[in-house]
Image 1 (spheres, helix red, strand yellow):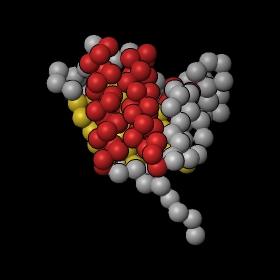
Image 2 (cartoon, one colour):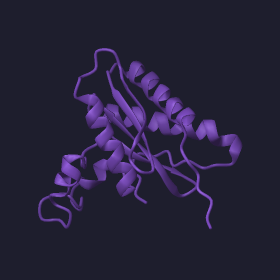
Image 3 (cartoon, one colour):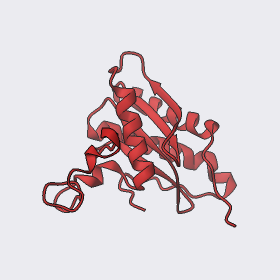
Image 4 (tube, one colour):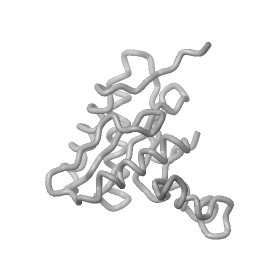
Length: 159
């Protein structure tokens, strides 16, 4: 039997807080969702004034990143993004009743090489969503540093 690392509410809230701090710093109103390894929300927040569509989009991005174990923008990144027309996964965005997101803003949460969840952000442009998402991953790494756990903190994650 194998032991598993589980993402808990404390870590999810810590990540959301870091994403909000970064969003405020760069002047963007975001919705942020952190999901567990099954794609279900642990924490979901919409900053005051952020779009009402943001929470669902953020959840979709987090769900996709956790479930497919890759950053969502990698699906449509030219020339080999699998969801681009003519490539092997073209149309995948219509899977899971339209919940599959293939654009920037979703990142798997990878600890010690295992995907334990995902984070999705909606509200900014791709650069802003990425900055807030990476800030959240860095915050998780800092939180877990004393436990000898390694968090992937780059934008382009594919497991």
